[in-house]
Amino acid sequence: MTDDLIRKAAKDLAAAKSVAALTGAGISVESGIPPFRGRGGIWEKIDPSYADIDRFMRNPADVWNVLIKEMKEIIDKAKPNDGHKGLAKLEELGKLNTIITQNVDGLHQMAGNTDVIEFHGTFAWQRCLDCDERCETSKVELTEIPPRCKCGGIYRPEVIFFGEMIPYKALLRSKEIASSCDIMLVIGTSATVHPAAMMPGVAKENGAKIIEINLDETPLTGHISDYLVKGKAGQVMNAILAEMESLA
Ligand code: APR
Image (cartoon, rainbow, N blue to C red):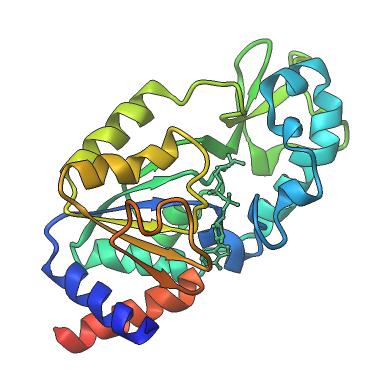
């Protein structure tokens, strides 16, 4: 079954004029970054309220200690896997234009994709709550928690916490991209957090083919998605690209 779908996806991508991708935490699992939901999900161990902006503002030290410190240790070490590299290859082949990612790990850019919309912000930068001074996360010392700016203000990651608005430019551009692609690859997302999870529906509304790559079914499967290629993102992307090569 999956082999047929690999062949189908390769044919669809080979014929496509403008491919977009929506990615979620699942594409980074093979880089050692745990997902939020499902097997080994972060929210099974940590209360999701730690990702609320009010909880952060009430007690930044607690959120730094419980959530952000561990994220920094994991992301500082993470490298792109075959899933990210497969999307970079699709851009090289002139197939994929834009990735809309819910991930904050910067691995798509590290893999070589040049147009990445960071829908939930980025963990690569911290910003001072008092003077807005920015500092690269990899350069932030954790000798003191929460880490502070030279002015004494507390640093916060430039990610979008629950309860914060999606950056308007990211939202607008994502809708434009979703409205104009002829294929949307939806990779490694549980499609449960809005408005990111709306983007495949926007693409579908505008006539795009929606191809899911995931270990499991999601609310999109059988409704919005044309088909789900079940498997690990890295392995599926390798197989699709190999099949595309054999078609060329
Ligand atoms: N390959 C493909 N898919 C995978 C893999 C893998 N190796 N491992 C896990 N998955 C799938 C899971 O089956 C699940 O459907 O990836 C999905 C991960 O879902 P979530 O952890 O919910 O991640 P995501 O959809 O990105 O979450 C959206 O929620 O907590 C917030 O802001 C956070 O951006 C995040 C948002």
